[in-house]
Length: 107
Figure 1 (cartoon, rainbow, N blue to C red):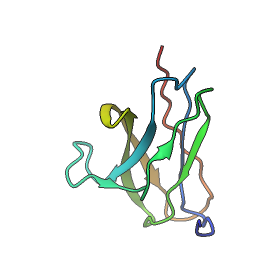
Figure 2 (cartoon, rainbow, N blue to C red):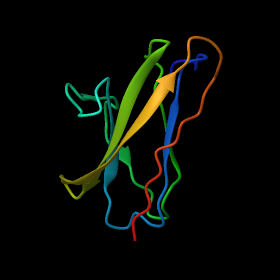
Figure 3 (cartoon, rainbow, N blue to C red):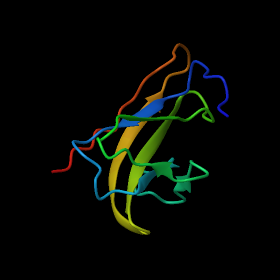
Figure 4 (cartoon, rainbow, N blue to C red):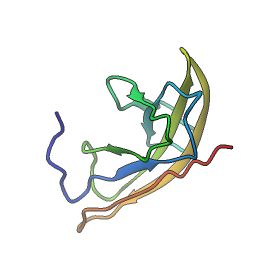
């Protein structure tokens, strides 16, 4: 179940050519570019699509007029294969909704 998207909810999207060796993904957020106190946002692993996606994750628990940093953790098998990010997202005081993208292309 997903909450209704409000004006300040960024969407993170990830797509790559193929995800044959990828089991899934986790999305993390922090208010620090260094990843201090990075918080995993998804409750369960986002399953990989062997054809390569695209994938969408809606982050609907944000404050306005703040900056957030996002990472995508790539899981292959049962272990972490690496992280993509950080990507900085600045949420304005008013307006929206806003779409933000975390591009990841892997050969």
